[in-house]
Image (cartoon, rainbow, N blue to C red; front, side):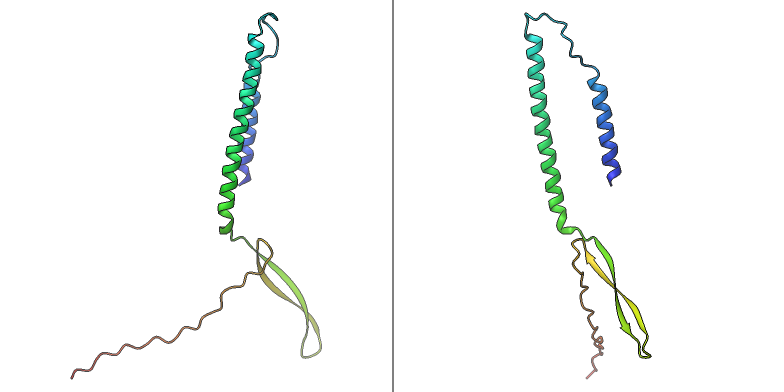
Length: 128
C-alpha cells in the first residue's frame, strides 16, 4: 500500500526538479522597469495560494475518506497468553491461551454458538 505513494512522491519530486530547472533568478531586465519583478512576485503569491488551496482540498478529502472507512476496519491480531497449571500427577506445565483482539487490543468475542433445533417433519395430510 505504501509503494504507490512512495513512487508518486518520488515521481513528483523528480518532476518538480526538472520543471524548476527551466527558470532563472538572474535579472536580465532594466531596474527602471519593475514589471518583471512585480510579475515574479505576483506569480509566486498566486502559486503559493493555489498550492495551499489544493493541499487543503486533498488533506480534507483524505481525512473524510479515512474517517468514513474507520468503522469498517476489522483488523484483528492473535495474542497468546501463557498460564501455569498443575496436572493430576503433580507436574507444573505452561498452557497457552490464544485471544483474538481488534486493532485497539480489545478481545473480540465471537457470538455464542446456537443450537440448531431439529427440523419439523412435514407429514402429508391423510385422505378422508
